[in-house]
Image (tube, rainbow, N blue to C red; front, side):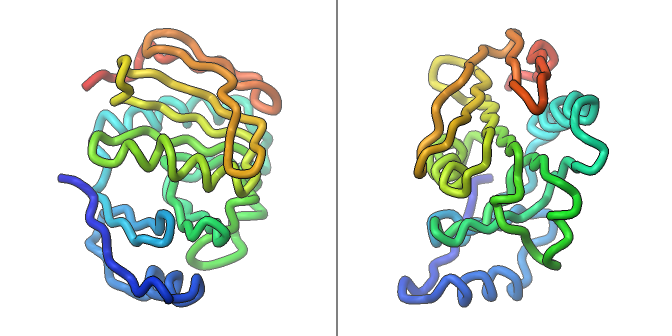
Length: 194
């Protein structure tokens, strides 16, 4: 099943768009995001997708400070990019994640992780990193199960404007290193292939 987009009035304000996102009753278990001003409703991720996120999350817990958390369903607002994004994982100070009942500002994140799904990999490769970089999130880890040259993991950093610099890329089966403040090597050997 692929993502569904919900048409909105192009003249609608950011506040109106967020209000619609907050108040609409969406299908249970779906992932609802605003990507470049368009509301996108995706089905729940596949089990292999979740296994990859869980493996990364397990490793991250061993290196993050005690007052940081790792969040799987945290909605992050990037108003300048008309984005309300829900990454697969967000690493952020816990105190910054209690500001609102529905979402936080993306600027609180230290790292975001996206695991691609076949139907909407483009968003994880293009639209979302532009929003994350705009918000100044220091690191973006893209686990691209559907990369054209085979499954790979890429770490992006040094955001400038809406662009990240690729810091490292590893094919599935190769390790990838996250620099300080994480100082962590993630082994991708256990990442399931589709």
